[in-house]
Length: 303
Ligand SMILES: Cc1cc2nc3c(=O)[nH]c(=O)nc-3n(C[C@H](O)[C@H](O)[C@H](O)COP(=O)(O)OP(=O)(O)OC[C@H]3O[C@@H](n4cnc5c(N)ncnc54)[C@H](O)[C@@H]3O)c2cc1C
Image (cartoon, rainbow, N blue to C red; front, top):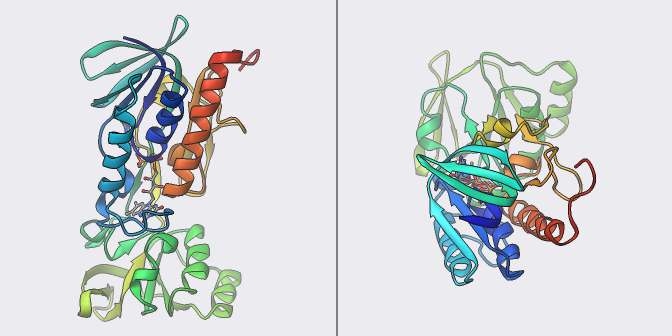
């Protein structure tokens, strides 16, 4: 039951980390609850050589390749408790205890918390999305919307405007100030100050944005920058130091992806402000490499 490393979260970051460890002939256990952040999208974009593949196809291939290494083990389940133990860490999965590892890698991702506006949740990952680099191209240059929920939405609207004529729809809680309105004007972003009441299916597979006054605006897609929280409890249970990202808390790591807890590393969306598959894979690989080298050379004094 003892492994050189345990990885909690077996998606893009976690599988990437585990692959480095398995290739270094180290024993690695990956625990995964099977809920990657992009599970709502049919296709993933922008990841070299995998553009347009279903997220599950990319992950299944990575799991198959990892499973071929004799020192890699994967279990499906949710890690409910992570604690420091003699010589490393102990992780509980449901009612199964006793999984121990000399090193721990947290790759548990984040959970998006969509604003409470009717119609958003059921369209999330389809016509309601957050990242233009992931899904903006597929809207074919048509009219786009951005839902203004806070200051990060202003930046989002300024960027999204490059993908098509953009309207910033105000939610009840947020209005751009004068300086932000001027920035938006300079990028050609229209501002709709009547609050968005809901979204419905629109013409040609797009969206009909329903405003508080009962009128509708047709757009191809609506971008939202949702607040996020940690998808798993391990960082909090271990007392990892956190940092505040633009949209929610992130695990604080140093340049070697070490958390504030000695022997514990973190990768992917949970510990990375730039959040996409390429960044998750990259930071995961780095965490795997750093964990491996710490097994060889030991941990720095005090961290
Ligand atoms: C709708 C949508 C579409 C997206 N489309 C794209 C795209 O096209 N291209 C792109 O590059 N990026 C895209 N992204 C971003 C991409 O999904 C993330 O950047 C990526 O999934 C992060 O990988 P990760 O491994 O850090 O976390 P995740 O993929 O979220 O994986 C975390 C894993 O940890 C598991 N986990 C959490 N807690 C526990 C626990 N306690 N025990 C065990 N397992 C646990 C989860 O179940 C999950 O399997 C999209 C995001 C969204 C929301």
